[in-house]
Length: 140
Length: 114
Image (cartoon, rainbow over all chains, first blue to last red; front, side, top):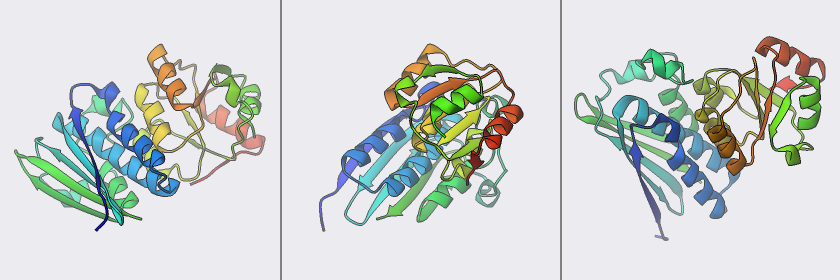
């Protein structure tokens, strides 16, 4: 097995204007590593959607990105309210976001479907009242 | 169409990125919901929106957008412009409403692409 690169980020849930800084950092790192631009775009979009979700729903959390020879794996873990109905949450257009979040341009019910759309594999591990961990993989 | 041509057609202000004026774009996506932009922007390299907050610039960054056009007279603040500068994204602002701005660009050959 080849080398792995691991990046970890603490996501501040209190500042919406800073949401996306971790995704931006990962995008730049992947660029410097010479990763294919389409792969970078998919990783950046999926992670950014997840990062926004962590800020608007879960008061932040932690993101770990592992780059290995075969794939890029993003693990987004929060201690938020959990997702009571994953089936509904995966439907395009279904959203539980507050109206003020929608006025900021998010909460259209596209976040989770987008994350699935742009990645090769996505798993959601959630417990209501405890938190959610989403693992996404993009293969090279 | 170059960013400079878009600026002239829309009678827009160049708020940042005049050095990018010769960058060429074929496809534009217009929306106020960033979630929709992230879902459907596809191959578009220009984003037209009436939403005005830092996440517009972040969304553009994730999608490799080269130019953001703010419509309806929306004006990004210094923080947003600094972020656009950092990311190398040109910023235009026009008084036109979204429908009119889209129509003008379409009339001159730009298309929506997803």
